[in-house]
Amino acid sequence: MDTYGGTGSKKNNVSANDDFLNKINVGDVVIAKKGRGELLGYGIVTSDYIYDKNRKNYQKTRQIDWKLKGNWKVDFNLVLKSLTDITKYSSDHPDYKTYYERLLGLMGVGSTQKDNKKVDVMSFPLNTIFYGPPGTGKTYNTINRALELCGEDLTGISRSDIKARFEQKVDEGRIIFTTFHQSMTYEDFMEGIKPIEPDKEGDPVIYRVEEGIFKKLCIEASFSLAKEEESVATEKVLDFSLAFDNFVQDIEEKLSSEETIEIATKNGGKVVIDSISQQGSIMIKHPGKNNTYPVSKQRLSKLHAAFPDLTDVSNIDQQFRSIIGGSNSTANWAVLNAIRNNNPATKEIPKEIRKYSWDDKVQVVKSLKKEDYKGKKGEPYVLIIDEINRGNVSQIFGELITLIEEDKRLGNPEAIQVQLPYSKDWFGVPPNVYIIGTMNTADRSVEALDTALRRRFSFTEMPPKPKLINTEGKVDNGIVNGIELSALLEIINKRIEKLLDKDHMIGHSYFLSVEGLKGLKSVFQNKIVPLLQEYFFGDFGKIGLVIGSKFFDIKDNQVEEDFFAPFEDYDSSPLVERKVYHLKNIHDMSDEVFIDALNDLQRKNK
Image (tube, rainbow, N blue to C red; front, side, top):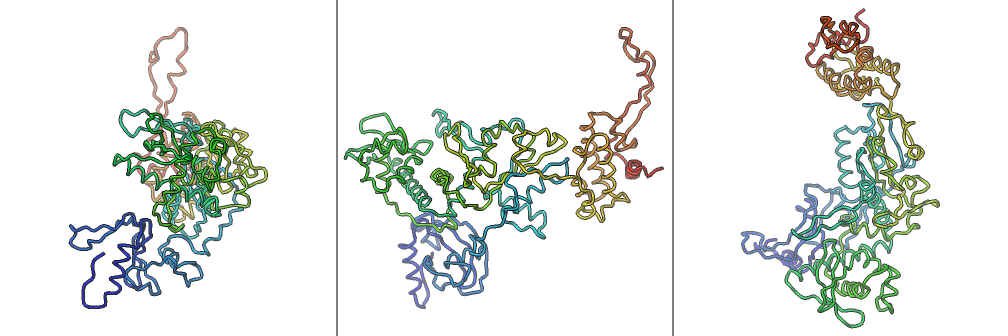
């Protein structure tokens, strides 16, 4: 901000400068505007008032964490003053309660009251597996299904826009995409003990329980339900989390200045705050002693919820242990009391743009009870598991295999929670978590899947659809140099089904990106031929029955009778006349030869 100049009225300038200096606080949301008809973005104040004499202009500053920048024209007059506190301004627009919500909504932040209606996803099963041969669009459809579950209308949307929306949902934590493989474990999927690199060289390695991908998604989904409800218990946890973080920040600043920090105990004594641990716990010791005791945010949050007034605590050992188990009750009481008396100057941030830490979310979810989930649906969260049949499902899911059933989800009468082996947390699967898997039937048939998995998933078959090449492919009517691609694929698949089964057919998606003969050669060289080699284990006779002889170099390879080394009385004479087959490099085939081979494949050369 700059000082005022000119000859006009300075009332607005004086007021703005006074507000900028004295009334703005760290944590305030600032919405930037240009004149009375354009918004420029919003950010959060991250510093106190700073006077920078080294700057030529705008010496009076505050640091802003800009969350969004751009240009948004409005069709009404914005507030006139340079700096206006709009916190209590109501909105005259029916879709918004407050004025600031309307401004943020115009920039695409938050949602209108109309938008808050939940998308009807009742028709979608909670657990689904798309199965079919390679190249039938299984992964493609999981992305579409996941976005539809998240409330996206994909009508008329280009594939590039769909991918952009998908990436956005992944960044938001609404969708997680993973691929199962042989080395995937329960520890990766649910939780495990992982080493944490020490802050300082020479410090010992710390081992900590880390959440896996599925547990993280369930925490996000449960937090979404809790935030939607905005219960008193949830707000208490979040308020305490903010107070704890501010207290720790104050402590770290004092410790960096080598201050001795003493806090009062219940009996009138003192304990000393020694340090902040790598895990974020406050380390307490008694004056003149070396032993330290950790006071964790998690335990304090439970005590904060259980004892609104610490003066009501008569026996801290007995009463605290009933809530958090064995611990140093004196240290926990002292820190909780200090946090409540600290009252740091914090500014409430609107819920639409408040950033919650991972620890905030964990603490809120841990505070939830089974009944908190009843009747709740919440916004959907989606886990996509590509190649679900490639992993050891029993090993990866463990006890979760029962918990993912619809009637065993939290909020249902038959809901089940289990105690996890490492963290000892009680865990259940919330009702707004959807699991979508894909399964390549060429690797493993549905019948061969783990029975427990088969019973808990709905299966949607994804067969080859050659006709889609004509309507969704890149070439007109699916025809390249007179070759009808859909007919070509149908012939190949009928032969594969005859020689093997329908699980090993070839998908239409390989042909959708073909734009000409060069692309078709690439599909045969890099997709179709390798799959046939895999399916028939190098049996060139069966491969030839599918694609014809003109894709092979066939050599009579006549050799002399004494070509083979002598070996006992083994008769090698039949092998002397054996033909040798080599698959041609299709990229090296001329266009004419390649087209001729395709016509031969379809028996058009008769």
